[in-house]
Length: 465
Ligand code: GDG
Image 1 (cartoon, helix red, strand yellow):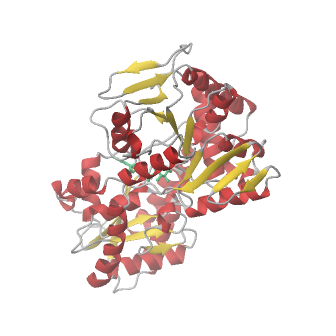
Image 2: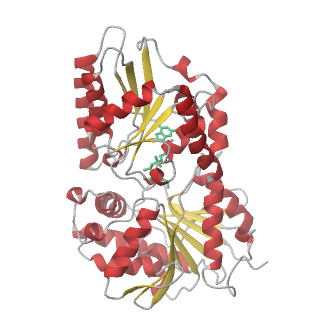
Image 3: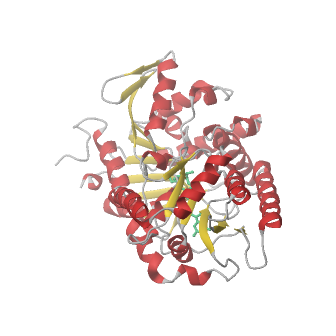
């Protein structure tokens, strides 16, 4: 296999999975690849410290090494909450209006990335392959190159790539492309992300598109491609039948169809728009249209950041108002849970739901869409209502596609989903299911690692056989 070459795989991501057993998805996929190469997984320590140590700290792991770097309270505030989640997250999710620019955020971001580069430099061997994940580490490869590190470096961005106009909202927009150019391979979620990237390169004075997906920027040449991330569908399908999801939901929904939404409480997920669309459905529902309950699970996320506090308040206000207007003695239209629900419970709930609403305003991929599909009974499947702004929309084309900003379209989609014939539901599901099962997380990591192995030409390829 291509990911079992002689060099080690070294993964860098914001979090290292310290819990056992690993909690599905990315963790499982990388676990295999890391074991295969005796590799390393590097991420942030869970607790902040007063003074960061000058070495990585090793944690017990089976088959490969898990290492953490320290963060101080100031690092967490400036690098993690400030620049990563207060500047880059809104920038990449088309919410430049929410960006909180403070010089100390950018300084903290660069300081932490430089520090990690220094720690990695001492650790890396010439034949290692480095796989960096996500927006917390955009400049890491660049910092490593500045220190003279020459290993093969790949980067995967889990969130949307900003458009050219979005990039202009940064104080130093050209830095973004320069950082990207330090890698040998840049992986993005969707074709639309690749198009945004190429458009930015085309406009950059020092950028050039070369044949075969190669790009040059300043003195660097690298490859860019989309690698749409998947899930572990079999695992989810099995969990979905372990218990009966409809037994888990109380009786106050007599005669109502069940719809589900599951998202970290994040403004990019379009939860208020979803509730508004649902409200429109309830407002305009004719006598022949079914009652419906929307079960919205939204665990807390980044709650120290103002925009997240505000979205929470907004959601609570809308849910209260819609329930006040439409609830009856035996029916609560919106059931909103602001907490984390165990995975073993989520999958059966997905299976019990007649429809899922996955309606982000911007989303790299959106795994919930794929998990909902994997959890369905193929004989009597539910319907996925999917935003055209989720990366998953490029793959799950048989979903009921919506523009989440258009309330009446959302209401119409809900009506359609809840009254759809079994035949049509099956036909749509078969297509989506094939995609989710075929393009799973194992295929995703194998494809990325193969491309990373090939990117420096046959001489350096780990796929030499
Ligand atoms: C980023 C990108 C991209 C959610 N609530 C609960 C819970 N979840 C699980 C879901 C799903 C995961 O969290 C969320 O993944 P998403 O893909 O939907 O969204 P992000 O967290 O924003 O992830 C995204 C992803 O990276 C991967 O590349 O798809 O676009 O933004 O697995 O099921 N899990 C449990 N309880 C909850 O309450 N157990």
